[in-house]
Image 1: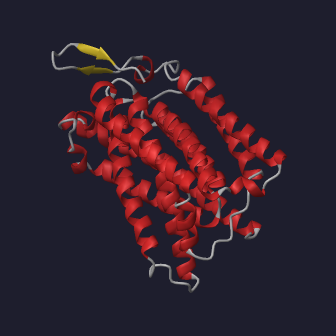
Image 2: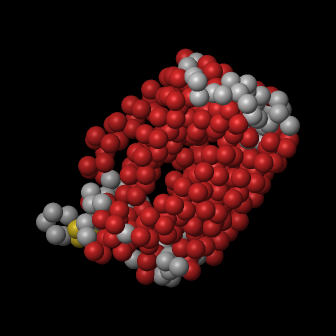
Length: 322
């Protein structure tokens, strides 16, 4: 097992990542709103946002944040790094309150505080990173029968959502788009961790890019990130940012922790007390995000209080329910 210092490095990188990612949601939403006013909205299949500087600024900010997050996975286990994404929710919600006028109710503030406390609890009881000496070790873990079954289940569910549920419920139910992003995200994180470990080992003198496994994980990460970007843009274009961020966080974090438990088996080295403490911390985060979601229409802002509407083909308004 590596030392505590690696966990601290991962912690600092993850915190920095949350600041950038939280900001990117607001910047991208501003770009999507400007693009939607000038052309076809992203939720309706348009790509006008690709010509919008604000959207690209948001993408650059998100890439910087993801880069820091990428580095964090090289030093710390997913059970430590992933839950710290709650801080990006807090940062995003605060910026949305002041910049996009998506007002937070007082209970939404309490939700942010719960997310913070839950994250601290998980960090204090997180396991140490496994000592991995080659990307081939990661490949061995990824090809264990149990993780292969998990991967197949995720891919089947994503195909069903894309083919059958997106055309029918994508415009009215946020969970469809967020579900696709979160499912793919859980596999993406496993790939990111593999590539991050390969880079760390390569920089230390043991070149891992001579193995095809490293390139396989790299291609997987690029493909899955592209798919996540498309469906996250659709969700942001339709639904309130202060709601998209926490719901995405809960689903993504839950699935990522499950995937990490199956693949890396990080909890095998922990005591019952540590596992229970981490579980309590995660439940606290869930309570915080639940408060954020349930109070989204109680902030007193037109953006928050007024239901969003989407015009169907017959031009009659249809309420969009998250």
